[in-house]
Length: 419
Image (cartoon, rainbow, N blue to C red; front, side, top):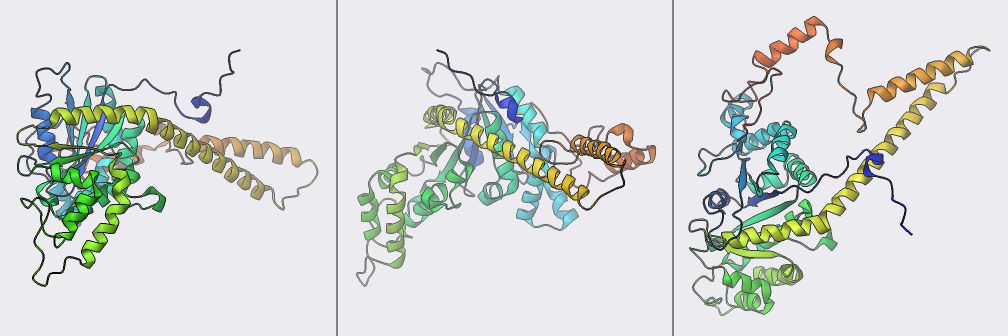
């Protein structure tokens, strides 16, 4: 006997699920100087290096760094076309990082339009690559970064590519710092982890392997004793490059230190997580490892569809249900407060009841599902209000926030540039 179908997601205010997009969104993050933009350039120049590849991935590029002067690839959507980073610094007396964060926040206010462009292109390309600002915390720990990440994950399969500077990670302490930033024990509920903050499939990319092979770092991840031997060989802050994983001890013959002991303890915490990470080496200069990266993205996409997407849909459903419950509670409380202590004369009860019903209908009409009051319709605005809004839009109100190169529409907004 066929089982009875449950209620559709539309019953909870959630639109029916769309077919999975062809494109996979790849959010490229990493420490400053790790080679993120150069890696994105490599993806544009080396889509598939092997002639045996059955299908060469097509990519769509988005630049989210407003401070970069030049990029070696051609971004299809560029934040610099919408927000003028230098003008923000002058107008609001901001420092470099503050201006980058403000520019990203302004861009995020229009990200629904950007997302519409990406959704339309998601059926024509294989990857949508997001090049994030150089300072990693500007994107990973800001509200705008979370909004962009959540919006992408709700629209298409999404993963994170964490870029690591291989030559700089040859010191055990630097290597462990990168790994701690990437993953951390979820039982500790530590938000230091990018992996558990984004809640998305993760790909660790060791960049610049043409300068320094990454095999030793993979050994440290797969064999705790190898990493422990490197710690015992000297100071954890010294590089082991070219020393076969060991360094000479100090003149006093001491091998242990507080730093070494701390790194040893942290390695024990992360040992379990290394087994579940996708790791690979890439040379952005030569294109080596690009094919392996495309395979890792395909694997991450499958993981997203099988594990992450059901969880995201469940959380979205819970948010909608909670919002509806809070709305009903507030409405009931408002109606109760309106009726407290109001005892009229006989014959006024019916009039009061009719008035309460009209008030309730008016309140429900003013509120949307998320509890926000709707903006008044255009026809409700007087002529003076329309002229004042038009003067703000075209008389310099938006120009202070958005650059002179941005293209303004009739409503005064600057739209990102499509391909």
